Image (tube, rainbow, N blue to C red):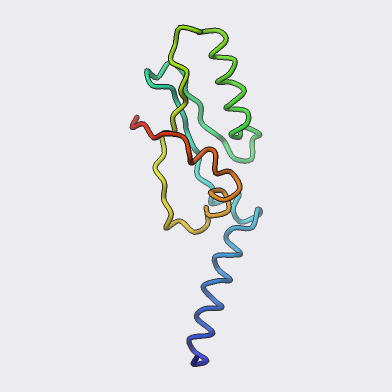
Length: 105
């Protein structure tokens, strides 16, 4: 391989790796939102404020206990964006949020 090609590969891989580190990822992370089918429950993650996916699941469980007649499926309101390489770490480590069925707001 040519030296120029090696340098480009190193630069690209370094950029992907650095952008997925927690200090950098903190500023680039998207706020993910969720809801049930009829919209009576909704939750938006707020990175850095302790409002993560686990808190949303706890709130959804509480909502289900208070409203047993409502539908019990949780949906994600965000589309998957695999080209956003700075979110790959989230997609790998927190894959359960990306496996939820999608519903358009």
